[in-house]
Length: 162
Image 1: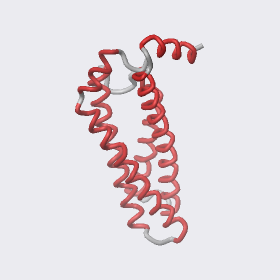
Image 2 (image 1 turned 90 degrees about the horizontal axis):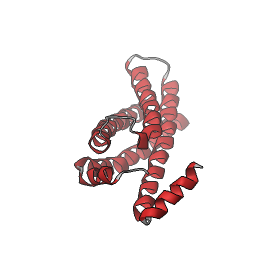
Image 3 (image 1 turned 30 degrees about the vertical axis):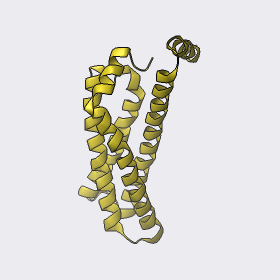
Image 4 (image 1 turned 120 degrees about the horizontal axis):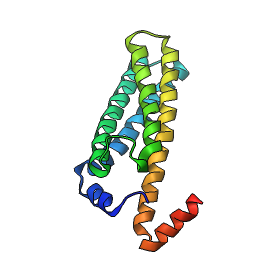
C-alpha cells in the first residue's frame, strides 16, 4: 500500500501537495528549454552563456522542488526523506542532486572545458528523466490504488510482491 488512510488524508490536506503539483510541470518545462539550449550549444558552439544560465536555473528549480518535497514527505509520512513509500525515488533524487550540484561546482571553479561541463549537465538531465519517470509511475500507482475497490488493491499488491 502506497498510503495508509491517514497518510492519504494528510497528503490531500497538505498545501505542499499543490506546491509539488505546480513545481513538477514547471521544472519539466525549464528542463525542456534548458535541454534545447544545451544541445544547441553542443551542436553549434553557440549560446554558451544562455545554456549555462538555463542549467543553473534548472538546478535551482530542482533544489526548490527537493526542499518542498522534503517538507511534503515530513507532513505526509512523518520523515523528511526516505519514507518507505518513496525510498527508491528519494535515493535516485540524491543522485540527481549530486550531478546537478557537480555541474554548478564545475562551472563555479572552472573545472573542465565548456563542452565537458555541458556533457555533465546532460548526465544530470538523464538522471532527472529517470527520476521523473519514477515519480510519474508512483503517481499512477497512487491513482490506481485510490480507484480500486478496497480489497482489490490489496490483492493486486500482494500479487506484485509474490
